[in-house]
Amino acid sequence: MKHILRYITFCAVLCCSMAAAAQNKVAEGIEADKTVHNFGDILLDSGPVSCTFTLKNTGSKPMVIYNVTTTCGCTEAEWTREPVKAGGTASITVSYTNNEGPYPFDKTITVYASDSKPILLKIRGICREKVLPLSERYPVAFGPFGMTETSLQCGNLEQGNSKSDAVIVANTSSSPVKVEFNDVSDNLTLSVKPNPIPANSTAELSYTVTAERGIWGKNTYWATPVINGKTYTTKDGDTKIGVKAFTKENFDRMSESERAQGPMPRFENSTYSFNRIKKGEEIHAEFTMTNTGKTPFCVYKVDTDACCYSHSDIPVAKPGEKISFRVHVNTENMPKGETLVLVTLTTNSPLRPIVNLFIAGWID
Image (cartoon, rainbow, N blue to C red; front, side, top):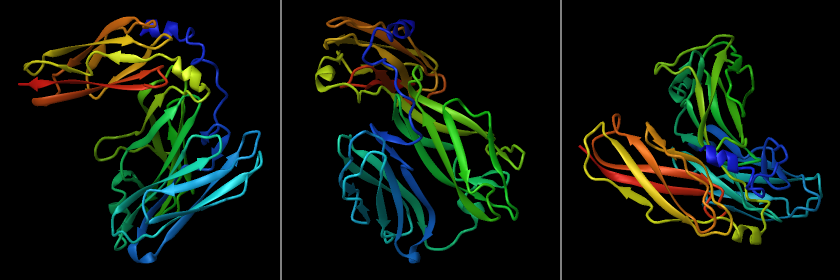
């Protein structure tokens, strides 16, 4: 990987400095007050629910929302139809019918605005037939602070941008609790609202991951909850909250011609197959590719879903050059039987910013 780090400065178009991102920058020249609205627990007989997203035009020319689509008929959207001047705001009100039954729901709203790639917003929550105690609805307990899980998802984000999400949390005690966070990873921010959380009630935990050059692919960002000045351990032994995110390159500032001139990896095989091996043996998977593009190709990071792995250095591939590299997987803690390991490359290719490869075989 040292070759890649040295070469980053050579890839001038891709490695130009970017302006600091706003908290919820959702597209070039557009910011959102939020990208996810979590209704939390709602009752089936309580009827439809709705929320409003606000988009701000931070560009220099008017913004128009041409269309807003939803994933199913249970969700409808109304939005500002007239052009929004620079510095102005538009609203998108989303309504959910709440008639699909007592299940969790997660709906995507796609916003099509002028001079922008589609913007994805989400509404989610859990519809229930009856009220359950907070301790049952939020069973992961840091003392009186309850969550549904300690591993949170933030999804994909691009360099120069931030990605936010939110979950509902609870105070399961009869007194207010103040929530703070220690040992917070760089590029992660968290907040709870309201805070303190009133007795026997819920609040929203919002979190934001900000991309930073040099941090690529899959990463987990950590924070330790501090409740009324104390730290707690859950019954599963957790003391931290983890936020998972995947960071890839940002090609928004590239023209179509620049994209067409970009690097293009072509792999001889996307799957490396190995013969039957004994558990504990190491797999040495080799992949070979040729850069058929017109500018040098580099890999920023290699991730796999195996618990123990390493890989050889991946040299920068000049246009027309063929290179090979190896991924080494330790099978000591892997289950026996048929095996499929996913290998994910984060790259500088505008057409293939993420490359998925596979290692397949049988472990006795």
